[in-house]
Image 1 (tube, helix red, strand yellow):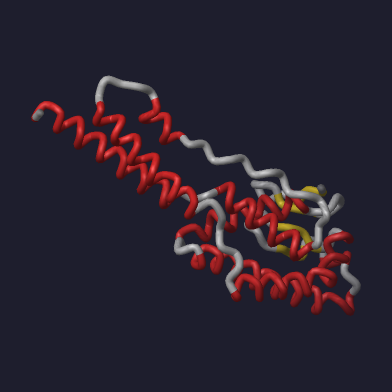
Image 2 (tube, helix red, strand yellow; image 1 turned 90 degrees about the vertical axis):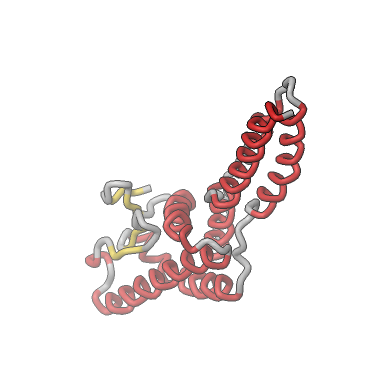
Amino acid sequence: MSRYLPLKLAALTLALSACVTINVYFPAAAAEKAADKIIEDVWGQQQSAPSSQSQDKQTSAVFGSPGPSVLLAAAGSVLDLLVPTANAQSADLNVATPAVRQLTQSMEARHPQLKKYYDAGAVGLTRDGLVEVRDQNLIPLPERNAARKLVSDENADRANLYREIASANGHPEWEADIRSTFAERWVSKASAGWYYQDKNGAWKRK
């Protein structure tokens, strides 16, 4: 039986490493789903978000093919029990915390004031998930200070939102990924005619 010990240890190591990878991997599809929900709440967009792709169960392929070793089959069964639990834990991001709701409501209340500046091309969406005064000449002089404050308040809420979602899901290190996901989804859901920055920082009109 000693000749099966290395195989047993290898199977156990593979199973454990696969579980760890799944637990810490950034759930991109779940982040897009969460971003779409929040953006629709804030902007009131009627367009539906693209359906998220179902996560591939790559781990089942590792032990899925029949083999001569009973140990591998047993390890596969154990992994099948562990992996769905890990996937279920990361299937959706928690965006229902009081802090997230408060930030979303604050942004929703501000949006009607910002919308006219988006429509005019005065304010645009930046590549890092924020907003920026793109052309102050498109803002009437008496409104410029108020517009700048709207932009500043919006950016503060957005930065806090990304941080809060990462923290609420137990992974503060996800903040940059969440910000990047939101940056893409803001642009994707923006109305025609709004300005946004491409990856190089150049302004483009949707």
